[in-house]
Length: 110
Image 1 (cartoon, rainbow, N blue to C red):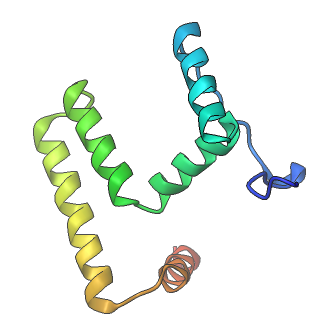
Image 2 (cartoon, rainbow, N blue to C red):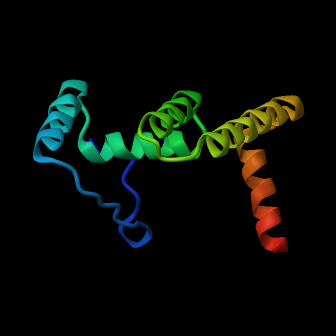
């Protein structure tokens, strides 16, 4: 079965980072347990992050706090902006493709 999550070769970028051998092995085992490969897992997480999935957004916020990756005021402001954006989206009842169109229009005007 073809993996539909893989972008076309002429339209993709390689994302790479380093981690410990132990964490790499644990990731491989977890992915095998879930019946996915590492690339599929990472693409799912990146998609959730980009699309503002609440679970991932909250997890990232918790990690920033836990590891001191951002100041408390900046974290608070960022979270408030995210919640305001979600509320605005709900109030306007916009779908993701409509939001994408708005971003395209704004990008063309800049």
